[in-house]
Image (cartoon, rainbow, N blue to C red; front, side, top):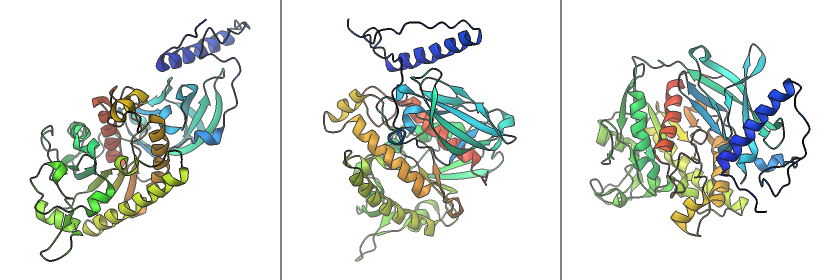
Length: 414
């Protein structure tokens, strides 16, 4: 008999529903011991859970997660562990209240979701628990601690905020900057302004940035093209690199701000880079991945130091690299057999771990991390035919994470 292969999302839904029903029957004393179905009848069924190698899953949770009262928050299973079988796992989150941890939010088949209430505003200790979905009830495998910061819905009202967004093709698409502008334009938010010399045709009113397809940290630091302003984006040099007559080009963000914005410095400078920097790293070689990331971080340090010198009071914010599309066929559509989904997943997961180590605990330097890897749906947030560029839903989820950070940025955590 040919095994029945259900779609991943249906498998997850059936598994969770069966666990809920079993729990209800057990509570009523009605659960019977039934013979196990043969493996050939349901290919995804398992009677006895196989042991899970906890270390290999690499549950990766940032030290701080921001949310806004009334706005949905999600952590997708596939985005926080390293596995080719995310459907075998679930997430639960406990929040500390009055010295005791209580379950919060909703455990779904492929994610944990939470919509904070106004009363949830504040800083909370949380535990993110990875559960084995193949056991009944689900068994805890490992746990990570973090802080959940919930901002009021009207945080920042009657204030002003200016932003500069620096990025690659995800930013060039302008969908998440547009979505961010829409969120900030709702009542109860600060009056916003975006700086930037790049205004693609699809940019909403007031939206601008420095986002260019294929760009890296290194390109922003070093790439010089004479008289590049006004050229099509792929032919431009770095907006932050200038050259005097007879002198070598140099990185000079201060001149960028002085030339284009009359000396104005933004309150927040957001960087969403990393895909192009690391995409060709050797996925089967962990040392090679780390060596590539080391090089990337050296270029990042150069740009961040120059920005800090030019804008000493600006918050410098690193966005964690978003997850890949969950579909291998999307990578085949883009790259044929040159790059695979599992290859980029291993690189991206390690990159996020290193970004957390490098930028996750530097609030005193006004250098911060936004966990934009958590909230992007790796299935419905991407088109069928693109491995790393989200669809409108995915870009909205990136914008929502940045928005939550902006709303909570004045809330300090102990």
